[in-house]
Image 1 (cartoon, one colour):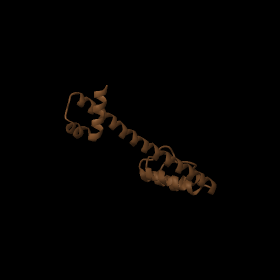
Image 2 (image 1 turned 90 degrees about the vertical axis):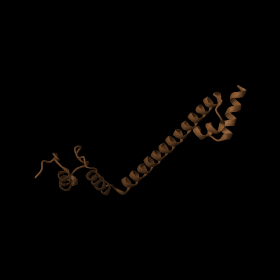
Image 3 (image 1 turned 30 degrees about the horizontal axis):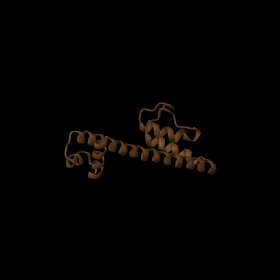
Image 4 (image 1 turned 180 degrees about the vertical axis):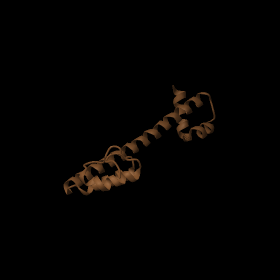
Length: 124
């Protein structure tokens, strides 16, 4: 037998779920197993009214959409940062009169972009 809120291993956590979950509104804080916590979540979803379930799904979809947007914006910012760094490196190399082919190889900027940067430097 096990103490109500003392879990020595995952078996104790599962036993607690089977014995007590029906009378609990949330899992005990000291449950560590992700699978047991997922089971509590499934039970909680099963106990929702249709209106509560719809609200939960809508909130989850909005949360997922926000997470996707953040991830996309992070990646976009990362790429833009890499381009800015490549431009800075290209400008330094142009000032040191390095060949355009070498600048292209190192920065991966197009030769057209490098030529444009070269013209900007010469006109400033």
